[in-house]
Length: 253
Ligand code: PGA
Image 1 (spheres, rainbow, N blue to C red):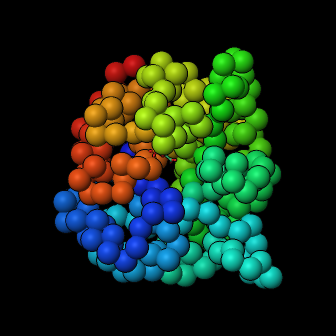
Image 2: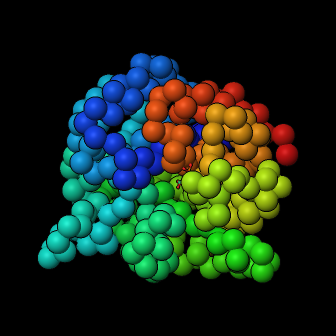
């Protein structure tokens, strides 16, 4: 049984006052039956981790450099994230891939750096709309998966997030059938590469306009082990019902 994970990606949102949302989440989910992760901007990680010190809610980063230290002005290493209390880091988010021209090779190096620092890497993959319309979704996902996930991946150090680029921040959500097709494909590929034990144990998140109103439908899809949530993770009011939907999820298809 894979333990479910509700992960929030605050992106470039949040100042000190917004730590109140993390306090509220801790208070509302004292005894969560799923894993909880919030990835605030780097500036808030230390304070957020202190708030969550006695709570199951974990704090993560949104990106890291592939190297542990060095002359890389403005960058943050996985070690530095771990040092201030992060337990995970998102790598290869489509906004990093497009804004910073990150390739899957870059993403794999970052995931390895995360592993070396003892962080869980949340490796993001997803197709663009033009690729879906050209019927290339599974080719794109297969290549990104193969190139972005390091060979030492395990259920403890790696989570895969399938986030179709056209669904991120757009209000468009992939249908349960579309999610199911891609998640089953990813599961097969993981089992093929890492063997059944590891391949079946690595968690697969869906991301892209997950909201309180559509979460239950998404969580009912087989091989969906949780969500990576952007906009709706910014407030406890929106994220809390998504967590509750995941706790109550029963896979039907
Ligand atoms: P969204 O973002 O929930 O705002 O669509 C998801 C993500 O980018 O992780």
